Length: 110
Length: 113
Image 1 (cartoon, rainbow over the protein chains, first blue to last red):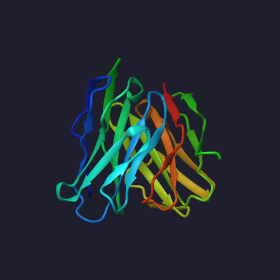
Image 2 (cartoon, chains in turn cyan, green):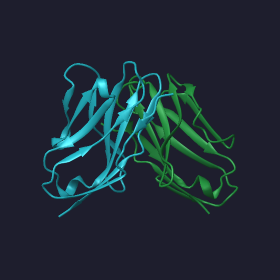
Image 3 (cartoon, rainbow over the protein chains, first blue to last red):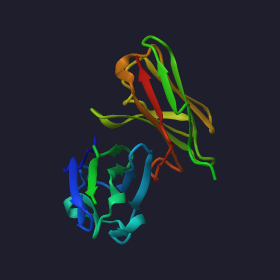
Image 4 (cartoon, chains in turn red, yellow):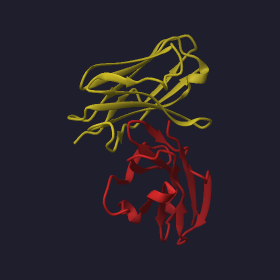
């Protein structure tokens, strides 16, 4: 069964700092990749997705992610975070099996 | 355009009682997923359906849990009997095809005393 690893459990940044959250998966075949965000007390919402094509995908709210097939990675980035980005971020890998990562809690200090 | 609808939003019950959580997926979506989220275990996939048929229920923790999808617009997750360790937020999600992006409902916060 495939697995999804999010290496950072809790990241604390100041506003305007750059963000990169790691996501690695174990499945070697074709996968669909997603990043979801969960704001405090809310449900998961889709940030961005990758199915095929350009490995650099743009999402909502200035987020982007890069699919690097050779590294089995799909890291999430944002050049300048805001206090409102404080949330939990989940990477998900879906093929015939589906797995969510354990999540990374991001705290942005004003 | 309504998203995924879950009810109730909050449920407080006593140990041993039966609990039924309900979900209405987005119209036109043919895949439905039930998840459980806790601080200790994170987000866990319990079961998912394709075209109303259960495909993978390997995440259902034990026989006390059961899920049904009698039609394309309704699903239930039942816990009988409930235990305090079942306390969690239960999310339902739907998608058009099980490999596409999932749309999550607001969740049901279950507290078993």
